[in-house]
Image (cartoon, rainbow, N blue to C red; front, side, top):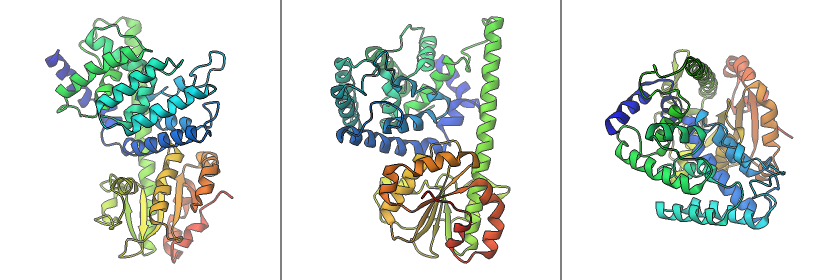
Length: 416
């Protein structure tokens, strides 16, 4: 198996359209998601503690968490479905039943604070013993983002890939089966971490590709004509998805460049997100505009790492004083961008800086809805939004006629 598995891993890594290359590595949205999901889980816990967690999935902090997860490429497509409230079946039974709701909150809090594998397994076994209807190993998709080296994600495609690769017959739906599968995945992951990663997402992505028949374990002569046609359609679909992602990334880079260019023209020090500085748009490298080093902000390391992922920051020349911050959102959760800007606001607030969400024109309704959230309004963070078309159209004029950051008011909008 080891030699055979190595050849499959190499095939997986060499395929430029596999989830290893499109999701797992070199993907800033994946990196940002860990912080956003962790913050979201903390909010779920607080809502349950304060009896603010609703009796339905829609509109809850849990919906935000699952939205962030399902946006993590096709590996997590459908991760939110098990948490939809199904009133006729009364599952998952964490909405109407107060005791179950509290148990769910305590489980999340204990897992969030867990320091090792033994604690996590103990919490999973305790949750399983409560027999809460509908609260099975679909939870692993949330736990993965809290402990990526200890808890592999879990869905139908992953278990199909597992069964196909290891010639097993494990079933979806039981924590006991999940724990058995996890043991095998962890063992294989440890043996092949040099080829993949300690992060179990890489191995789970491999199983996902096998389960979706996008990665073949050998020659395809054994496929029937129907299966071959299905495989070709899946490969074509993946190619289209990859093309769309490339198009979105190009658009994201364009908006970042405009913001860097305007900030520099206005006389500010500007910097792109820490994992974007090697990027460029239309031949203009961000590194030629950005500061070479991030200004010295005396903040907690975790908060600072999150702030460094904000798409564009403007600083007063030669200082660490933040003037403006911009989060460019394409298809990802606008709320996660709001969280990053809020982190910055709470950390360096001086009442002068302004925070902007930069969004596609067709997502204006989404940004208005998110900025209208009571929790955002109570935070009293001065947050505006700019549409892509406005930024693109007026970039040169803002550079030419602007004196300071207030010129951005000409194209920015706010929710009253």
